[in-house]
Length: 123
Ligand code: HEC
Image 1 (tube, helix red, strand yellow):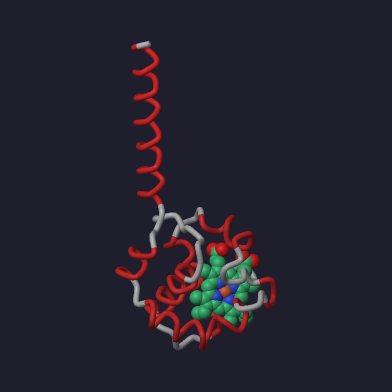
Image 2: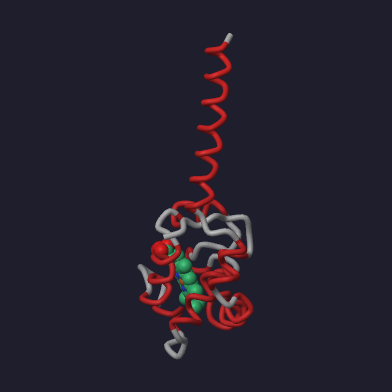
């Protein structure tokens, strides 16, 4: 009886620990909006990114499409931002708009991540 209680308590703590860990490794919406300027990101997105990412032009990962984003999210926020700035495969650097600042690109990525219930690793 006592053993079973101990086991249940240990399991409970393991679950709490696991949930905490998952929480700590992902960017929440609150974290995105405190670290990035989401309204500015929306403005940049509409101007420079939506043309491909709204509908998956050139196989761009569509905003809010979990299947498109899931494999990319594990790289973490900084890698996604770097790829948006430097370009990756058929994605042009800064979406082809050279005049964008690094902050504008970062905010645009954060805006894309903030739109839906897609979790991005915090690294
Ligand atoms: C001309 C079309 C086009 C435009 C404009 C564009 N993208 Fe992309 N984007 C792509 C394509 C295609 C990919 C997929 C590249 C690949 O991984 O093969 C991509 C991938 C990405 C990724 C995922 C990178 C990764 O590491 O998986 C991010 C983030 C991104 N774009 C952000 C942006 C932002 C921010 C803008 C605007 C500043 C933008 N894109 C504009 C086509 C575009």
